[in-house]
Image (cartoon, rainbow, N blue to C red; front, side, top):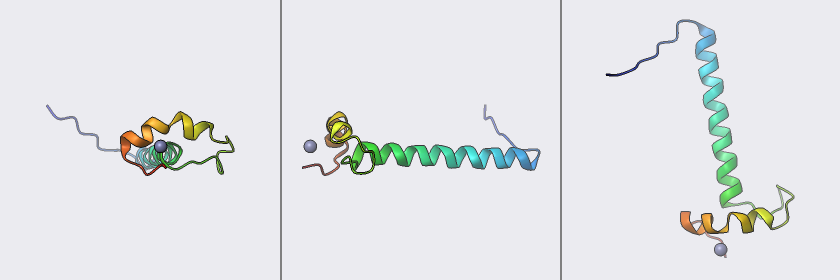
Length: 64
Ligand SMILES: [Zn+2]
């Protein structure tokens, strides 16, 4: 059984677009914080880097 959603109004489509944009932005922010942050942007020193260190290696992101 397939579930299909067909927006009936323009506001439904706008809400779907805004939700999609929000999810994509949060995913990119998470990717940045896990993979690339060195403390310069997050102003956390090396705290986030050390916190996400195993995740970086697990994902194969160059670290050190
Ligand atoms: Zn490392």
